[in-house]
Image (tube, rainbow, N blue to C red; front, side):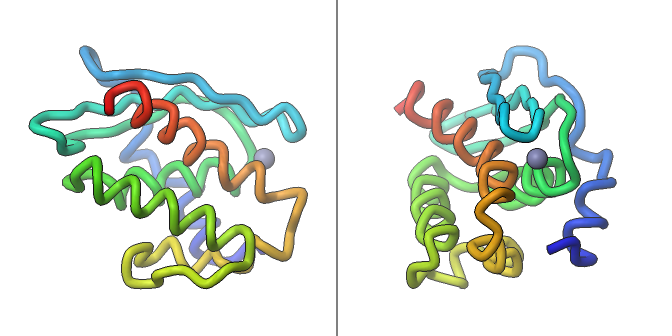
Length: 134
Ligand code: ZN
C-alpha cells in the first residue's frame, strides 16, 4: 500500500497550516492515532482554499493532501459527488474514475481494512463541513 503516490503526498507541505476565517472541523482516527483539523474556505458555493493541521500515519497525511489538491476550485455539489465516489471506491464498488482523478490510484485501499480509516479520516472531516454549510 505504501506506493510512490502515498510517499510523495505524505511529505507535501503546501497544504499544511491554518486559514483564518475559514470553516474548521476536527477529526480523529483513534485506531491509528491520526488527527486532523481541516480548514475550508468557501465563496459562492465554491471551495477557494483549503489547508489542514494534524499528525498521523503516511496514509492519513497523503490522503488529506490529495483530497485538498482535488477540491480547491470545485463547487460544493461537485465535492459531494467526489465524496460519494470515494465511499464507493473504499467499499470495492464501481465508481467514477474520472470524477476522482488521481485519488482513484488509491483504490487498492479497499483491500486493507485497517488502513481504510486512515484514508477516510480527511474525507469524513470534509463531509462534516459540507453538511454544516449546505
Ligand atoms: Zn493512520
